[in-house]
Amino acid sequence: LGKALGSLCKMKPAALNDSTTLLILSDAQTVDRETAYHALVEAKRLSGQVIWLNPLAENHWKHQKSAQIMASLCTMVSCNTLHALTDACKRLVRT
Image (cartoon, rainbow, N blue to C red; front, side, top):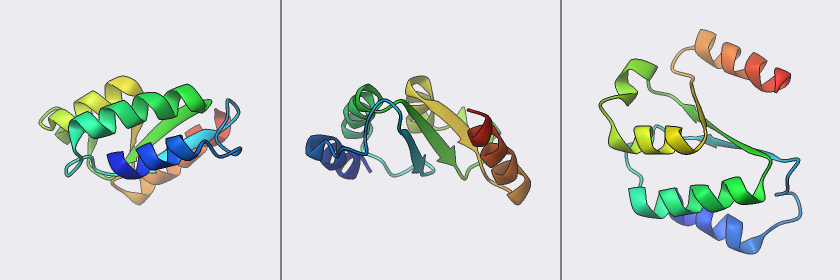
């Protein structure tokens, strides 16, 4: 994830700008934390906002260092059930 996000940021596509909402869907369990951290910082700089959709229940994030780090950098939203995903989508529409 960190490498892919880093590559995207290096390309600096026109679609990635301050009016862009960048959505990431990941449980953050298998990310290289350092690479993902730096890439996410750059993605935040280039885009209007970054929202991380996490398919793990929010009460599991406290046991996962990567999720904690990524949540400190962007808005992390649980989407571990259809109800949670619906709520996340409603929240995105309001943002």
